[in-house]
Length: 361
Image 1 (tube, rainbow, N blue to C red):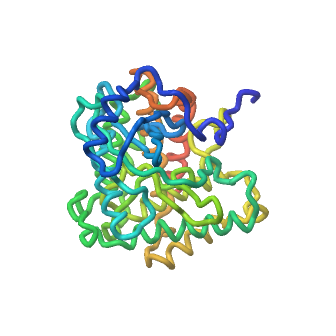
Image 2: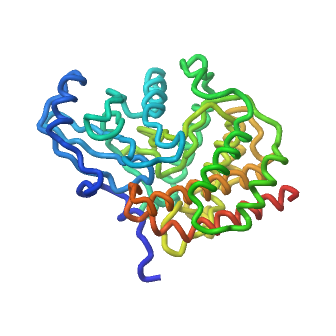
Image 3: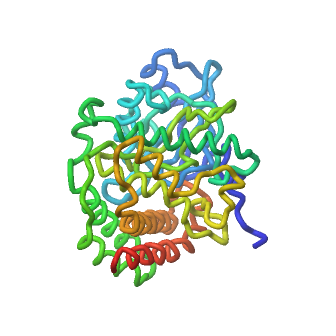
């Protein structure tokens, strides 16, 4: 298609702030100068192109740059856009040296910019919006993928209690609760009936695999939510912690593994995929190899129930995309390319049902 989205160009960098997300910069500047040690204006404000949920802004000041994440304005689905939870988790992880941006301040006062927000330091580096990493080479791709694997394993090896996050979510029953949550969210934002989603809402709760030990889970761990060093494969920061909670690490890594089998989008919108790529030529490990390495690093068994976890995660992603479409309908979508995602919900639902059938549906 001639209008296929170039994800790297479309989602990289910043753009002028959307009209419906305008911020009183002078008021924000005054508040930050009193709330953040060393902060000094004037502030130059830009909106990041990437991201679908919580609007994110670059704040340039004479001394340094910061990033602001805000809750979008308007009527929102229950429990969504929890920027206060994002702030709490990156604060805790930063204390133990896990790669996250340095958290600076959380503002619950909606009078400052119109909704709750938090401020963190800008982290320099690269974001690869395509999992095949165009323009890279096999040696670098192999190193980045190994670092990405190791970073997720490190996250899942933390004891939440030792991070001070023992109450960050309920322990046990994570996948069952997620299925219930996203079933509800899907129904609230549905714009058409998709039979596979209806079947999955019935099938998934009755076919849960054994639970794994409760760990901190990211909820949206993928290559384009990582900042990679400009000079090597190191992960400088893991981004977008909106969906983080306590949960099943196997469900979390299975979501991450979907990029190997993600249905391709004709428009280029949605989530990037490795499906159809020559992985060996690219220097990217095969899925089975990648998961075996993760299993060695964590002691968890991912592959035993991978079909169920793919079914669950494709269902979950379809529901998330449907929520984005609902925000397009309601005028609160953060990304101008969000409307393109409407065509992805059905293929994601069909993929989910395919893996459910492989799991015995």
